[in-house]
Image (cartoon, rainbow, N blue to C red; front, side):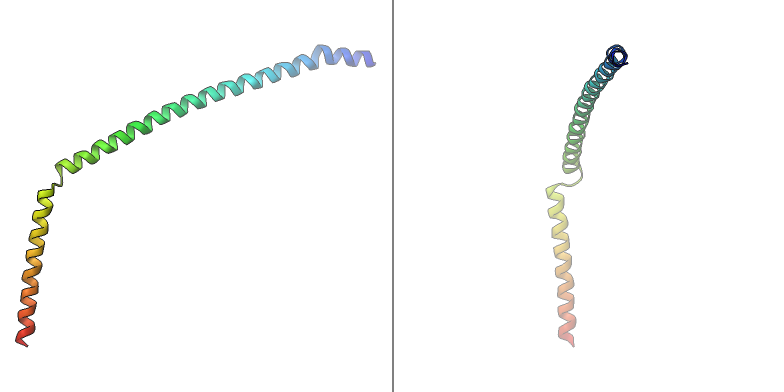
Length: 95
């Protein structure tokens, strides 16, 4: 009986466990390779997005708002506020 158990283990169980272990090792290696490939692909996409965002910010800064335009708007607002302040002072003095 003991001899049959040893034969069973030697002929069936040990090769089966070795095959399962090899399968697990191979699966782990493939998953690590795919994870690395996905990570590299994702990093490349993030770099592309960062570059695109920087280009868009530069485009907006060049084409939509210029320093001269901002100074013009600031001067107009300041002049308008000074006129309002002058009118309020005149109303306050007349009372």
